[in-house]
Length: 191
Image (cartoon, rainbow, N blue to C red; front, side, top):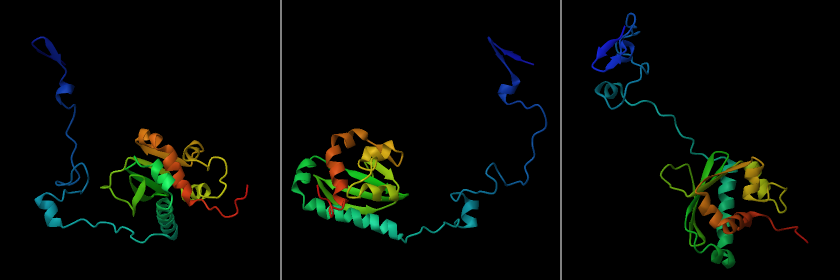
Protein backbone atom coordinates (compact mmCIF):
# COMPACT_ATOMS: atom_id res chain seq x y z
CA UNK A 1 0.00 0.00 0.00
CA UNK A 2 1.30 3.47 -0.79
CA UNK A 3 0.63 6.80 0.84
CA UNK A 4 0.30 10.05 -0.98
CA UNK A 5 2.19 13.03 0.47
CA UNK A 6 1.50 15.98 -1.76
CA UNK A 7 2.89 15.23 -5.18
CA UNK A 8 5.02 12.26 -4.05
CA UNK A 9 3.99 8.71 -3.43
CA UNK A 10 5.77 6.99 -0.54
CA UNK A 11 6.20 3.25 -0.26
CA UNK A 12 6.05 2.09 3.38
CA UNK A 13 8.98 -0.35 2.97
CA UNK A 14 11.20 2.63 2.15
CA UNK A 15 10.11 4.37 5.34
CA UNK A 16 11.37 1.51 7.44
CA UNK A 17 8.07 -0.28 7.91
CA UNK A 18 8.61 -3.99 8.47
CA UNK A 19 6.49 -6.79 7.27
CA UNK A 20 6.64 -9.07 10.28
CA UNK A 21 7.85 -9.28 13.84
CA UNK A 22 11.09 -7.63 14.92
CA UNK A 23 13.98 -10.14 15.19
CA UNK A 24 15.00 -10.83 18.78
CA UNK A 25 18.60 -10.51 19.95
CA UNK A 26 20.38 -13.43 21.54
CA UNK A 27 21.32 -11.38 24.60
CA UNK A 28 20.21 -7.96 25.76
CA UNK A 29 23.63 -6.26 25.55
CA UNK A 30 25.09 -7.94 22.49
CA UNK A 31 25.03 -5.83 19.35
CA UNK A 32 25.87 -6.13 15.71
CA UNK A 33 29.52 -6.95 16.46
CA UNK A 34 28.79 -9.72 18.97
CA UNK A 35 30.26 -9.17 22.42
CA UNK A 36 32.69 -6.49 21.29
CA UNK A 37 32.58 -3.33 23.42
CA UNK A 38 34.34 -0.10 22.59
CA UNK A 39 37.19 0.57 25.04
CA UNK A 40 36.14 4.25 25.03
CA UNK A 41 32.85 3.57 26.82
CA UNK A 42 32.27 3.09 30.56
CA UNK A 43 31.46 -0.59 30.04
CA UNK A 44 34.58 -1.04 27.94
CA UNK A 45 36.75 0.63 30.58
CA UNK A 46 35.32 -1.69 33.23
CA UNK A 47 36.32 -4.71 31.15
CA UNK A 48 39.94 -3.62 30.99
CA UNK A 49 42.27 -3.44 28.05
CA UNK A 50 41.97 -6.01 25.33
CA UNK A 51 45.00 -8.26 24.92
CA UNK A 52 47.31 -7.07 22.17
CA UNK A 53 49.31 -9.69 20.30
CA UNK A 54 53.04 -9.28 20.85
CA UNK A 55 55.03 -8.05 17.89
CA UNK A 56 58.02 -10.10 16.88
CA UNK A 57 60.98 -7.83 17.50
CA UNK A 58 63.56 -10.40 16.56
CA UNK A 59 64.72 -10.19 12.99
CA UNK A 60 65.38 -13.25 10.93
CA UNK A 61 68.82 -13.84 9.49
CA UNK A 62 67.56 -12.94 6.01
CA UNK A 63 66.12 -9.59 7.18
CA UNK A 64 69.37 -8.76 8.95
CA UNK A 65 71.30 -9.65 5.79
CA UNK A 66 69.11 -7.36 3.66
CA UNK A 67 69.56 -4.46 6.10
CA UNK A 68 73.32 -5.02 6.19
CA UNK A 69 73.41 -5.07 2.37
CA UNK A 70 71.69 -1.68 2.27
CA UNK A 71 74.20 -0.35 4.79
CA UNK A 72 76.97 -1.64 2.48
CA UNK A 73 75.26 0.21 -0.38
CA UNK A 74 75.26 3.33 1.81
CA UNK A 75 79.05 3.04 2.36
CA UNK A 76 79.68 2.32 -1.34
CA UNK A 77 77.61 5.35 -2.35
CA UNK A 78 79.70 7.58 -0.09
CA UNK A 79 82.74 6.42 -2.07
CA UNK A 80 81.13 7.06 -5.50
CA UNK A 81 81.17 10.80 -6.25
CA UNK A 82 79.81 10.30 -9.78
CA UNK A 83 76.62 8.78 -8.32
CA UNK A 84 76.30 11.56 -5.75
CA UNK A 85 76.56 14.07 -8.57
CA UNK A 86 73.93 12.15 -10.55
CA UNK A 87 71.54 12.14 -7.59
CA UNK A 88 72.26 15.60 -6.21
CA UNK A 89 68.62 16.64 -6.76
CA UNK A 90 67.18 13.50 -5.15
CA UNK A 91 66.13 13.99 -1.53
CA UNK A 92 63.36 11.53 -0.72
CA UNK A 93 62.53 8.51 1.43
CA UNK A 94 62.12 5.21 -0.40
CA UNK A 95 60.49 2.08 0.97
CA UNK A 96 62.08 -1.24 0.04
CA UNK A 97 59.89 -4.16 1.11
CA UNK A 98 61.45 -7.61 0.97
CA UNK A 99 59.18 -10.52 1.90
CA UNK A 100 57.02 -8.25 4.04
CA UNK A 101 59.91 -6.71 6.00
CA UNK A 102 60.36 -3.01 5.34
CA UNK A 103 63.53 -0.97 4.97
CA UNK A 104 63.38 2.81 4.63
CA UNK A 105 66.20 4.49 2.67
CA UNK A 106 66.36 8.23 3.29
CA UNK A 107 68.24 10.04 0.54
CA UNK A 108 69.51 13.60 0.89
CA UNK A 109 71.15 15.25 -2.11
CA UNK A 110 72.38 12.00 -3.60
CA UNK A 111 73.54 10.39 -0.34
CA UNK A 112 71.82 7.79 1.79
CA UNK A 113 71.38 9.52 5.13
CA UNK A 114 69.79 6.60 6.95
CA UNK A 115 68.82 2.97 6.57
CA UNK A 116 65.97 2.22 8.98
CA UNK A 117 64.23 -1.10 9.45
CA UNK A 118 60.46 -0.97 9.53
CA UNK A 119 57.57 -1.37 9.77
CA UNK A 120 56.56 2.20 10.48
CA UNK A 121 53.27 3.85 9.68
CA UNK A 122 54.70 7.24 10.57
CA UNK A 123 57.51 7.26 8.01
CA UNK A 124 56.31 8.86 4.77
CA UNK A 125 57.84 7.51 1.58
CA UNK A 126 57.75 8.77 -2.00
CA UNK A 127 57.78 5.42 -3.79
CA UNK A 128 58.19 1.78 -2.83
CA UNK A 129 59.87 -1.24 -4.38
CA UNK A 130 58.30 -4.48 -3.15
CA UNK A 131 59.92 -7.81 -3.98
CA UNK A 132 60.90 -11.13 -2.48
CA UNK A 133 64.32 -12.02 -1.05
CA UNK A 134 65.15 -14.59 -3.70
CA UNK A 135 64.50 -12.12 -6.52
CA UNK A 136 66.59 -9.48 -4.76
CA UNK A 137 69.49 -11.93 -4.36
CA UNK A 138 69.28 -12.75 -8.07
CA UNK A 139 69.20 -9.00 -8.81
CA UNK A 140 72.44 -8.58 -6.83
CA UNK A 141 74.31 -11.38 -8.65
CA UNK A 142 77.35 -10.25 -10.70
CA UNK A 143 75.59 -11.18 -13.95
CA UNK A 144 71.87 -11.35 -13.22
CA UNK A 145 69.58 -13.45 -15.37
CA UNK A 146 67.18 -11.73 -17.78
CA UNK A 147 64.37 -10.12 -15.83
CA UNK A 148 66.51 -9.79 -12.71
CA UNK A 149 68.87 -7.22 -14.24
CA UNK A 150 66.60 -4.22 -13.69
CA UNK A 151 63.97 -2.83 -11.33
CA UNK A 152 61.38 -2.77 -14.09
CA UNK A 153 62.52 -6.24 -15.16
CA UNK A 154 61.47 -7.53 -11.74
CA UNK A 155 58.06 -5.94 -12.25
CA UNK A 156 57.71 -7.36 -15.74
CA UNK A 157 58.37 -10.96 -14.67
CA UNK A 158 56.01 -10.57 -11.70
CA UNK A 159 58.65 -10.69 -8.96
CA UNK A 160 58.39 -7.03 -7.97
CA UNK A 161 55.96 -4.16 -7.62
CA UNK A 162 56.46 -0.41 -7.63
CA UNK A 163 54.03 1.76 -5.67
CA UNK A 164 53.76 5.46 -4.99
CA UNK A 165 55.00 8.41 -7.03
CA UNK A 166 56.26 6.81 -10.24
CA UNK A 167 57.20 10.20 -11.70
CA UNK A 168 59.81 10.73 -8.98
CA UNK A 169 61.23 7.28 -9.69
CA UNK A 170 61.39 7.87 -13.43
CA UNK A 171 63.02 11.29 -13.00
CA UNK A 172 65.77 9.67 -10.92
CA UNK A 173 65.71 6.23 -12.51
CA UNK A 174 69.37 5.99 -13.52
CA UNK A 175 70.53 7.11 -10.08
CA UNK A 176 68.20 4.72 -8.23
CA UNK A 177 69.08 1.73 -10.44
CA UNK A 178 72.80 2.41 -10.11
CA UNK A 179 72.50 2.74 -6.33
CA UNK A 180 70.72 -0.61 -6.05
CA UNK A 181 73.31 -2.18 -8.36
CA UNK A 182 76.14 -1.15 -5.99
CA UNK A 183 75.48 -4.37 -4.06
CA UNK A 184 76.36 -6.53 -7.04
CA UNK A 185 79.52 -8.51 -6.48
CA UNK A 186 82.26 -7.51 -8.90
CA UNK A 187 84.63 -10.43 -8.30
CA UNK A 188 85.03 -12.79 -11.21
CA UNK A 189 83.83 -10.34 -13.86
CA UNK A 190 86.20 -10.41 -16.79
CA UNK A 191 85.10 -9.11 -20.11
